[in-house]
Length: 345
Image (cartoon, rainbow, N blue to C red; front, top):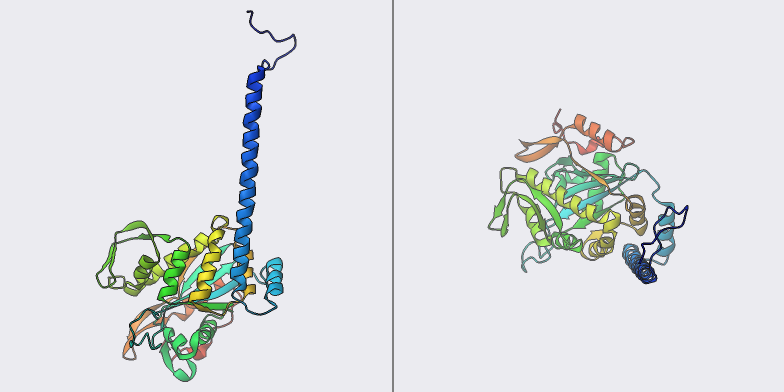
């Protein structure tokens, strides 16, 4: 049989035999069917996520008007360029032994006070740590450490104190205890963290090597409670910020939005907060479609032994410069919060 020769003027490939053409046509039909199947599954899963997210967001705001208000917030988006939320981590443990102070509700100082500032223009999230020993003059309560604010006047009072100190309007607060913190980390499937040195504590049943590792809620709780090393509270607050950043990073990206409903549900059922659905919708609208860049900040100051104890004294000049960067139109610091001889120059 002679070889196939293309007709004069034909420069393409020779025509396929009928059997090969049919097989290739069948392959393309299978590929097309698979693509359609994946699209259907994808849109179905996306719809499921939207439904769960909608339910979780609505759970924060009871009342007949929540549907309309949440819809309006989602459509209009954030009303300002920046939003701030106060995160309060208390030392209250609902699993405490019967008869203990915690079981009686006498615990609950905020060992973690963190202001989360969301900038929807730069897609930057700043986690500003307020050291728990920061000395302030709290109205009729006199000189106190800032971690006592929630005990003296509740989390709303703590929010007011932080607003007066920073000059930054705060949308609301979320209060976590030991159990809710652990469940929040588990709700996002655990987080990856990096330790610059091993952490071992027999009392906490903690034994962590140095380096990068994945931790669940129980292990994350051990890490944020541990402070019996040379770094002390400074090391603990750094780990607290690292874990909070890791949780937010997982849910504030398109690939992690599926974890957000579970996290919101956990927050709504295991912690106290005064956030409305509108606030949550604004944050989702402004930050949910971009991978945020996290910045860690610490209220400037230093620890000193004064008034018969150790207090953290803020540096007013550096603090003003910090707030100017984070929130250019912030209000001045309420000087009634500053005890005499307290500031560091």
